[in-house]
Amino acid sequence: MTNAAPPVLSTRALNRAFLERQLLLRRAPMPVLDAVERLVGLQAQSPMDPYYTLAARVEGFRPEALSDLLASREAVRISLMRSTIHLVSARDCRALRPVVQPMQDRALQGSFAKRLVGVDLDRLAGRARELVADRPYTFHDLGRALAEEWPEHEPQALAMAARTVLPLVQVTPRALWGRSGQAAHTTVETWLGRGLDAEPDLDGLLERYLAAFGPASVKDMQTWSGLTRLREVVERLRPRLRTFRDEQGVELFDLPDAPLPDADTPAPVRFLPEFDNLLLSHADRSRVIDPADIRRLWRTNRAYRSFLLDGFVGGLWRLDRARQDATLVIEPFGRLSKADRAALETEAAGVLALAAPEAHHEVRFGDVA
Image 1: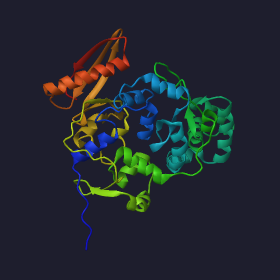
Image 2: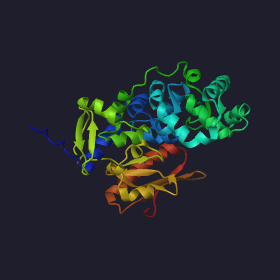
Image 3: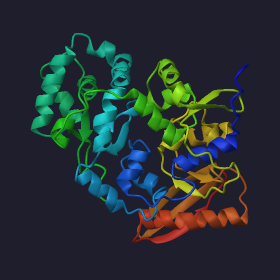
Image 4: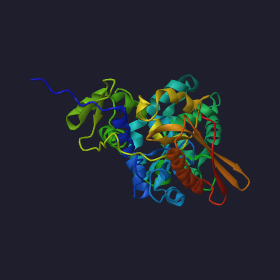
């Protein structure tokens, strides 16, 4: 007897499953910290992006709620998946960094190995720890301070090495709503009063990934996390997972009780920030953006803000400010129906209320991107 072939999920079915898990089929009435943990952190290299990420997902979101979490140190900003800055809960900061540390080490060796020849990384970690425990340092200042002991090496390479070998968090007022501040760093222990978890839980991380981003292939998991050689981990987890195939025959893994909405479930308009993990967490992004449109979203080596229309990226948007005026400009990838225009205008009004509450608001449709 042969096992039955796994079910095939259409691109549209994958899209609706993904949106459901990303809180994008309907805004969720949940505390902000719960949403941050459910999404396994928020891409945050652009300091204000997480506010727009959550505004698209959490019912009644107030930016002050996220600022308060950062100020109280219940949420922090730290380099995690893909060696990029993520905003996570303090609990996830301690849990996730040990899991992705091998990727951090590999990235350092790949980019800076030649520039760090002769540097004892253990000694560098000790010196950097002493420095940032005394006061937070910007990368520029940390690199210069370390260069006093390693004068033959570039300050930038020394600072990047410190960020890799030490779990450095970015301290406030960086990323507080309505505030500004340079990216200054100290250790997790100094900022949170506790160090990292002792035992990395890779299995748990992959299960949480599936809960927020699944169903997904092994390559998808590697793309999101930056980790490699996850096939054997997934094979170990296989008895606890269910499997599917996509329309190209790629094997997908999922949690047994994860939601799979009907492919025809309505999907509302949503505006996304420049960097949203919705667009960065799969090797095959076709479940949320047409492959032909990817070059429009990432052109000239920079990212653009996008919006979802019927669940897929439907175009770009930007916010233009001029004195007391704030204009949200929408650039669709194709022609819009009257209903689509109305839905975009309604959702855009909420984005303007968040971004520029005191300004005079206007929504304008630009040329097709």
